[in-house]
Length: 287
Image (cartoon, rainbow, N blue to C red; front, side, top):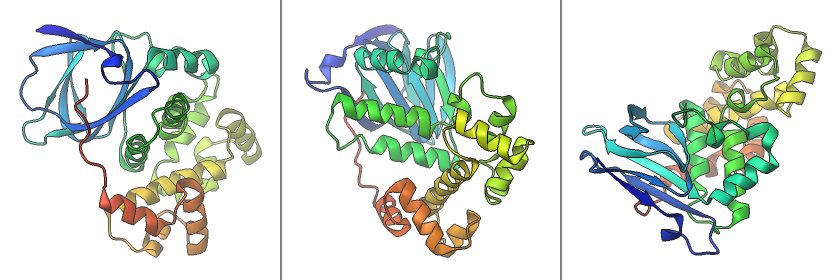
């Protein structure tokens, strides 16, 4: 199969720092593989694709997010029945170099900077997938500045991904387990008590370690997970606001509205209307 090299300057003006695209992939077998002189983050928004990556064939399902490095060689083929739509953000090497230099303790050797043979792939489902889609969508109609793409990438790496995927290597295993368990409805509906019970440690100790390694309290962590679950329900069901709140483990509707606005910057009703409209049209053809 022939190989082609794509260059970032084909897509960007000198003053621009990133390019966004949203497109439906071709179900025909690819005739070429490609590499490039930039980094790219892509998310499988709908469907399924066969991904040829560094000589390996893999199937990516809806919710797969892949951290492609400049040295990776890949190609796509959409599933003939399910089709495939992806969202993509690509950016200059200088952006990646700036991020890993500034936040080396968090990112060196991880995600875009992994030295493994294959790029890092994170499979997201449910509320986490909804959060990823929302975050990617913010890049469609925004100024293509360095500050904007840096903010986007930090959001992806510290908020969209599970904290367990980016938590510091010195974090105790029990805390990572508690983060993973807290994404289960039967746990987050119990609030901070569910998080602490999953940790299997004393309340004060769990609070101290959560603030140290997550930067938030167990209550704040669980409320974030609850609102992510709420966002998924608002976008994909016809449940009433009261039913959504109760499914998150929150009885007080005013409290639910306040928490949701803190996380998403809008009321639950406004969020539902915005997601139902799905205003984004297919993006430009990506590399």
